[in-house]
Every structure is written in C-alpha cells, then in structure tokens.
Amino acid sequence: MMTARPLTKRFLRQAIRVFDAAATPYGVDRYVELVRPSWSSTEVRAKVVRVERTTPRTVTLTLRPNGNWAGFRAGQYTQLSVEIEGVQHTRCYSMTNAATDRHGLIELSITAHPEGRVSRHLRQSATRGQVLGLTKAQGLFTLPHAEPDHMLLISGGSGITPVMSMLRTRCALGWTNSVTFLHYALTESDMLYRLELEELARTSPNVRLVRVFTDEPGTGDLDGFLSLDQLNAADPGWASAEAFVCGPAPLMDATRTLFEERGRGGHLHTEAFTLTQFTAEAGTIDGTVRFGASEIGRPSNGTPLLNQAEAAGLTPLHGCRMGICHTCTRTLCSGVVRDAVTGDLTNGPDVEIRICISIPVGDVEIDL
Image (cartoon, rainbow, N blue to C red; front, side, top):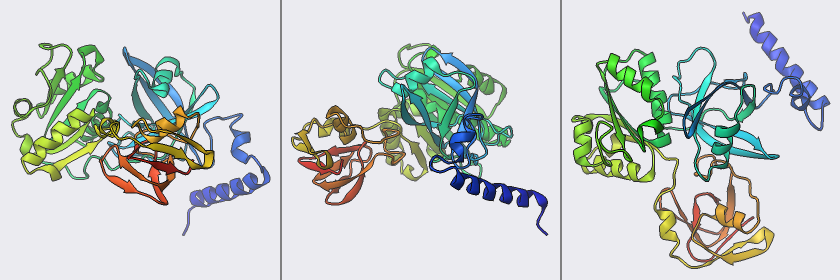
C-alpha cells in the first residue's frame, strides 16, 4: 500500500509541471526565486550559511543545498556557478566535509589563484545568505566502499580538499586501519585544515600526519619534494597501500612514477585539477587556428583552444577549464589536437573535443 508522503510528492511534482507550463516563457522557477532564491524545481542551488577566511588565500563556504541535491561520495566535486559583473562563471570544487553528514550541508574550501577570477571573487566577496548554483556531485575519485588494510592520502596545496573529505568520512565511519596523510604546502600558514589534522593525528594512533612546507625548510616533518627516500620516510609501508593523490602536476607525476616502478600503479587513484607539461610542449608547434563559424583565423600560440578563442575576442561557453565538466565541448572540423591532460592526439573531422584542454598540433579548424 502506497503511503501518503510519496503521493504528496508526486502530486507536488505534477502541479509544478503544470504551473511551469503556464508560466511560459520563463517557467515557475523565475517567479518563485524572486521570493526564495535557492528554490528550484529542477536546478541544484545552495545558500551560503557560513563564510570562513581560514588562511591568507582561502575561503571556506558552508552551503545548504536545496532539495535537488542528492548527496555525494567522499572525493567527489560539484560545478559551482556564480554571477560576476553580470556574467555567469562555473568552476569545479571538491566537497571537504564527511559524506556521512546528516545535516544536509556541504563544505567547499577555495584557494584564490592569481589568475582565478572565480576563486578570487569568492575569496573577496562571498557572503552569508548568497545563493550559488551547483550541479549534482560528480567524479570517480572516491573513497572505496570497503576499508583498505592501509590507506595513503597525498595532497598538495588546494588538492587537499577531496582527500580531506575522504579522511573525515573514514573517521565518521569508524574505520580503524592505518592511514598516512602526506600534505605539501608552501608555508605553515598556507595549510588548510592544519589544526584539525594535527589534533586528529595527536588523538588517533592509527592516523599519521606528515607535513612538508616547501618554502619553509625545517618547519615541517620533512623537507623538499616527493622522492623515493621521502616517501619511505613518510610511510615505510606505502608500497602496500591503497593510495589517493590530488595536487599539482609535478606531485602527481612523481607519485605515479614511484607506484608504477614498484608495480603498484593499479592501486594509485588520482584527481587532477591542473594541466600537465603537454601545454608547454605544444607551444613549439606552428600552425593556424581557424574558428569556422566566426570566420576568424590566427596563428596558433600553442595554448588550449579556449584560451586562443578568448584572445580572438570570442566568448565560448565553458566551465571548469580543466577538462572535467565538458561544458566547452565543440566540434573539431579538421586538423589534430593534443589532450593537455593525457597527451593523446585526436584527429578531425567532426569529432567532439573539450577546447579547454585541446591544444592544436599544426593547422586546426573548430566549429566556433
């Protein structure tokens, strides 16, 4: 026998569809949001309920999503949208709180980068009560369902966010097997969640915290950058661990090399929010980029097609600028492009590519 609650929800959804059709051309959302901005019949939106500027370069936002949010797995991200000077911008940010949180809140910690328009805007201007757009949680970089015998979490800079969620979720689930948390920051004051991590390591005998402050040698637990000797010092049992790493490309590359040399590449899980060395390599290749629909042609400068389109005065739709969200997908009409993340080559014609990570190799034309 069906309960009254599902019937009520079903009736409400049907009523909203009727009202939405009657409210054409704008839809019911555009009227209701005048009174309650975070409400939507279809879109995920969230109200900012707390703002903490936790380090000189970061802001931590606690958000209350509306009913269209379906939760997340530790390690996943959302695409956050914010309006800046009348233009909607979208970027990807990982949730940092435990995925088991029962209060319906999510936490995002955002590091302002010198050229990051959205991150700088949020660091400077985010306020309590502000409403932001979100997508449902995405990503395959997630905490496993079953507890590993030994877990190694490695992060650098803002890459701490997804692995912080993994650690918090692990603790909330009551997992007791050993975990090593190895983090790289420029300085002690730059390290997100430093005090929480230090307290956790002090009170939990199965949690080992290793801090490396690359611009302040002698102030952390180890010095320098990731190497075999350093990894052995941080976690002597690393080769038997299930490892998760997120951070700058050099850290990711070094970790991948060490695990593959030990034959443990299948036990390394990665999340990348930066482009690799392929961008620089492609800058040595000559050619012309043609934006067919706009009838604009220009010499290639070896940067991703999104950058070159913007330099030509075009404003293509885009989101994360890291090849994650697929918002910038366009058709490659002719030519060859290199994926800045994987290094793979893609040949036209009539192939869909993400222009934020596609670098022309010789003459290229795209439908833009």
